[in-house]
Length: 161
Image (cartoon, rainbow, N blue to C red):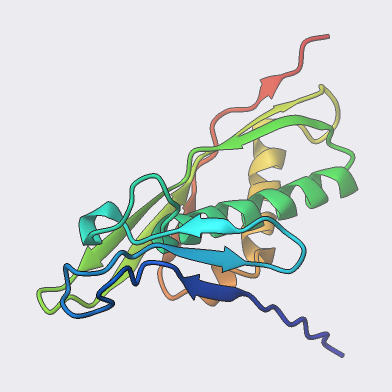
């Protein structure tokens, strides 16, 4: 039996100004992402598409969501395996190709997780690689995209005693 989960968000455009969409250059791409009981997330387009570089763009958030999903599964699987993770950082990157007509798509996202953990069973690089593979296999978002999501973990560091 499978479970279903629903998600909802409100995206409200705030960039109409005085003229609205009278031309491609007349309006701001600024918008707010509203999620129940949370502060608004200030969004815009990528600066390459006339967006505000001080706001989050959907392409960045897309890469972030894949990174978050992997991290949360990795931490879950590490805890279940008795591996004590003290720090986790991922400098994720993504590549998007834009066609001449303006349409585009992501071609890949690469996760670069770095972990700090306590010494103990299951903390050798081979065991950690298995945890990363299992996290990738479980990640709801990585399973939902039609491009490569690569995981290239750095060698683990040991926590100071």
